[in-house]
Image 1 (cartoon, helix red, strand yellow):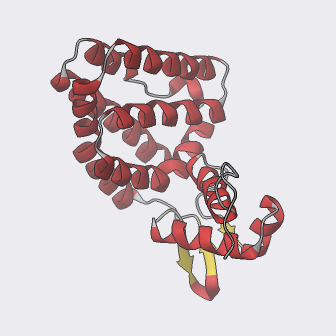
Image 2 (cartoon, one colour):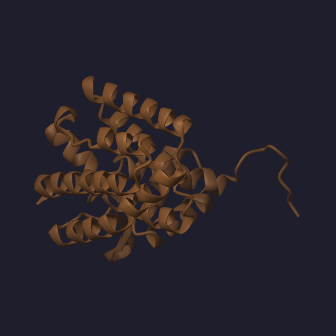
Length: 217
C-alpha cells in the first residue's frame, strides 16, 4: 500500500484537477474549445491517469461536455442556458450573502474589503485575469462565511459553467465596464443587515449575468 508522507501535499490527480478547473473557471479554455488527453498531458506535464480523472470530474460537474467522436469541449452557452444560470444564481447566492451577514464581523469585512480593493486595482489597469481571480476570490470568501457547504458547492458548480463566457465578455468590453455591486454588499455586511446583503448580491448577480447574455447572444 502506498501511503503518502505527512505534509506531502495533495495527490497528483487532485493537483491536476485543481489546475484544469482553474483553466475552465478563468477562461483559459474558451467556449467551444476542444481538449484532448494528450494535449493536457503535455501542457500540464502530468500523467494520463490524473488527466483522465480530472476530465471525468469536470464533465460530471458540467464544466466540460462530451461531443461526437469522443471529443471533449468547453460548452458554449446559449440564451436559454444563461437564463437558467441566472435563475439558479439568484435563488442561491443572495441566500449565502444573507447567511454571511449573520456571521460576519469587523475582521471578515476587512478581509473582503482588501479583496475588493485588489479587484478595483485589476479593473483600473485592465487586468482581465486579475479581475476574474479577485472577483471569484471575493465571492468565495463571502460564501465561506455563510457556513452553508451544500449551497456553496452548488454555487461553485454554477461558476464553472459561466466562467469561460465571462472571460469572453471581459475581452469584448474591457474591465472598466464590468459590473460591481460589491460596495453595497460590503456596507450591508458592515451593518450586519442580512436583507440588504441579499438585495445587493441579487443585484450583482443579475447585472453580471445580463452583461454575459448581451455579450454572447
